[in-house]
Amino acid sequence: MEVIIGPVVALILGITYSDIKNKKNLEEIKAAREELITQLELVQKNVNDVDQEILKKSLQIIMPIAKATERLQDAVGVK
Image (cartoon, rainbow, N blue to C red; front, side, top):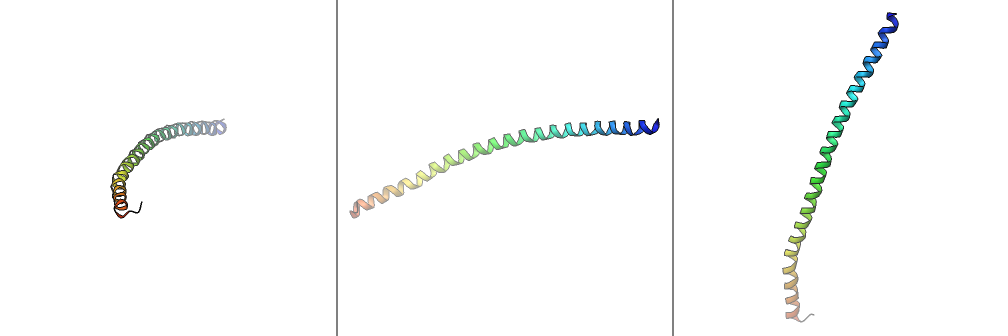
């Protein structure tokens, strides 16, 4: 009788322990996934903001150069 009950109890305890650990790990994975999604959304927002700033700054740099080039072409008569 003890030969049968001992291994069965050990098997049940092992399965229960494994199930508890798997559920805990699944919860941790879900929490990490949510955190990563939040961080990804923040990074995407920052990238969009930086893109807009770069566009504005590029135009601020390029427009005076374009106007100066146009004036120079007018003065030289290249147009």
